[in-house]
Length: 88
Image (cartoon, rainbow, N blue to C red; front, side, top):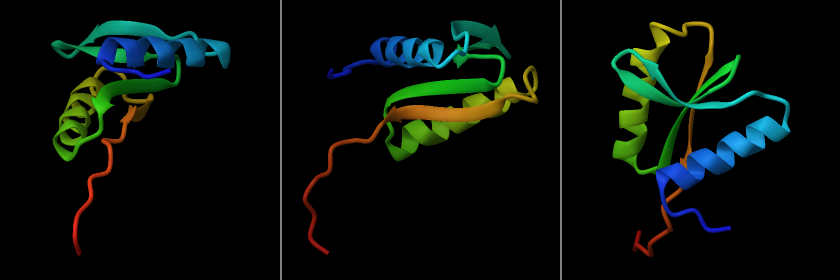
């Protein structure tokens, strides 16, 4: 399955978590924003492409959400960008 956007990745991740026995909720309000996925143990910020800037953005979002959910494990989930050829 090829995932092309954040909503599809959220849906697939939440479905997988549900299959593992976690009760995943999507788009839960927290700290002026919305946590992409939350379970009783995890806060998950989803980024379809894990570029450096996307990772930094997700980290900032999780720090904000941590104020409301300090005991939850913070997770950044996403897909790595395709490798490009480069000369070293």
